[in-house]
Image 1: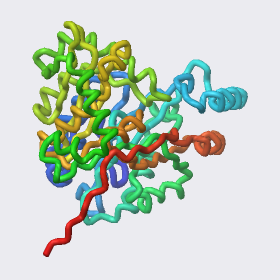
Image 2: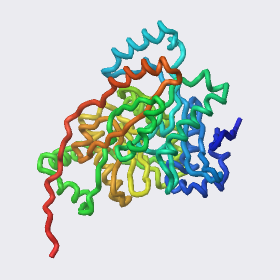
Image 3: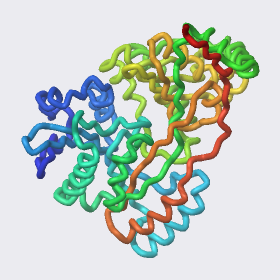
Image 4: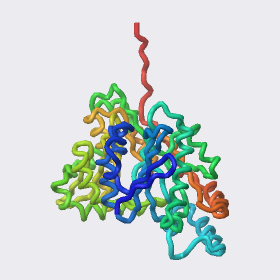
Length: 399
């Protein structure tokens, strides 16, 4: 059942459709795809295993000044499969001995941010606002809400706010005063599209010889792959294979906050049209890979991919995807590609550079929060060798 509740200077909604049109207009946030009802409803309506809430903050004159998406997700400590696995086992033993963790129940995390996209896509603050104060108010409003909703108090284990770029830390570090712990995970990998790259050949020309040779080799190996554009009309045909290919990739992640339901693709295509791109790769009538992306203002944001690893090396499937992202960005006149997290080294080989993102996390109760701090201090991004594929640019002074 849809629900709206007002507490202090905030309103809370369980459905995007319940937020009044006048609030959207006053905030002026819907030009940003990630804060548009079309995007938010597509995500919420296809993930029944996640509780979605939406917070609107108001000033003293009851004008809306900020908006945040909230997801309550189930996080299973057993899902951690990276170098932290041994430490997690110790945390589980301590937590169960102190009756802080249950072997049967998941760790429920209330997330302010976007579970399925990297970057600052979960909290919108209207211009000319004191952003430090707004972040403080948002943190307090979430706690007020959880404490007031009795059906939620027993469920929530921890609060998380994600993902803040370096330039925002002077604002978001206010959360440290509220007993949050900060940490970095894998960086976003970003590629700036140089204005001199008129087309893909211009991109190749800008590369050092060995990287250009590598790119051409990948394109040669992947030549047998047939490209198809996946739309809301033909996605049902490919969805079962896409699910399998997506799970191939997601299972390799160190840990995931939530599993993406690929049925969302159909709704995203219906709601966003050409702003959402899905491309598949066919080999001998079988789907062996797919990519997806969001055209967001001047950015191309890589979304989820799927790969049949049996063919990946022989046909350079993943490398082909990375170069195709660059082609798509050029076609859409984008100035930057956000390749997202994971596979940082190979993304750096096509020119992407890391952007650190900071996450803030705190347990609802003080004693587990102290234990959580020891876990947080051990979380470090996976080290990788940053590649530098481009030639030094020759600067010519204008006369």
